[in-house]
Amino acid sequence: MDLGEVMQEGVTAPEMLVDDLLVEAEHHYVYGQKESAKTWILLHACRQLVEADKTVLWADMEMGRKNVADRLIALGAEPEAVSAHFVYLEFPALDLGEETTVLWRTLLRVKEPALVVFDAQTEFLGVAKLNENIGTDIERWAQPYITPARRIGAATVVLDHVPHGGADRPVASRQKGAAAKVELKVIRDEPFGREKVGRVTVERTKNTVSAPIPEKQSFHIGGDGEGGFVFEPAEPAIDPNYAAKAEQEENVRQAIVEVLRGEGTEISQSNLRTLVRGKVDGGVADKRFNEIAREMASDDQHPVAVEPRGQVRFYSLDDGD
Image (tube, rainbow, N blue to C red; front, side, top):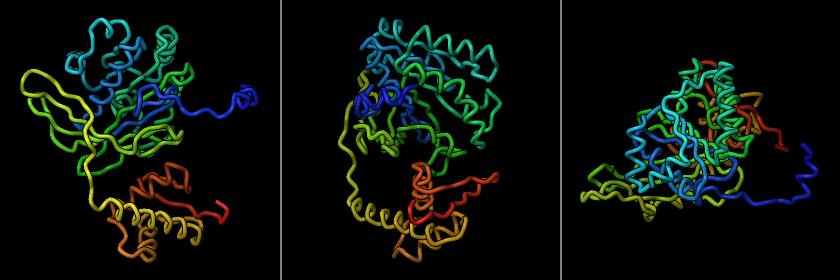
C-alpha cells in the first residue's frame, strides 16, 4: 500500500452509509441492555440499505429467521428488496476452522455487502470456544471474520450486551470495542411492544473518525394498537442537570490526567478514584467514575491494562503525553 498515493488524495471527511448512524467501510460497536432495541435500530438501517439496492449480510446468533422476518415486516421492508439484498445467516457456526473461514471469505467476495452485522458477539465467541474475558481471544475471532469484511470495503457492526444490574459498559473484556471507530449505546427510555409505543435513545460514546453522528438521538418505537408499527424520530429527553454534570465529569477527566502524571509506574482503579476525589469537589458516583476512566482508556488517552482477574491498572503519563 502506497500511503503517499493515498495522501495525494487529500483529507476526506467520513462518508455515511446510513445517515446519523453508520459510516462507510468502518467498524461499529453497538451495545445496550437486552431488549433495548439494538436489533430494531440496525434492522431499520438495513431496510434503508436494501431498498437502495445495497447488500446487507446479517449473521444471526440471537433472533432466528421468524423473528427477524417479523421485524422487517413491522419496519415496512419490501419482501422483494429483502430477497435481493438481505443475505441472512441463521445460527452460523463461525468457528476458527479453515473450511469455515474460507467459506466466509468466499461469501464476502460473491455478495460484496455494504454492511455486515454480527448479532451478538458473546454468542459467536462461545461457538468458537473463545473467552470473552480475554482480549486475545476476541482478536482471534475478529481476524478471520471482521477483518476480511473490512478489507472488501464493507462497514461492520457487532451487537453486544451490557451486564444486568444497571452497568453501562459491555460485558467482559474492553477489547471488544477497541477496534471500533464508532461506538453506540442504545438505551430504552420507555418500554415498547406490539401494542405500545415507547422510546429509545442512541448515544454516541466513541467517534474516532469524527463522523457526523449526533451525540444523542431518540426514537419512538412500537405498535400503535391498531395494527401499525411506529419507528420515528423523537425529541431527546432533557436533563435539567446536564450542564452541571458535564462540567463535573470534565473536571474528573482533568484530575485523572493530573494524577497519572504524578504517580509511579502503575495505579489501581480504586486508588486512582481515591486520589481523584482529593482533587475534585463533589466528584461523581463510583460507577460513573469507572466508566469515565475506561472511556478515556478506550480512546487511548492514557495507558491501561486489564489483569487476569479483571483488575484494571492504569499506567503513569509522561508530561509530554
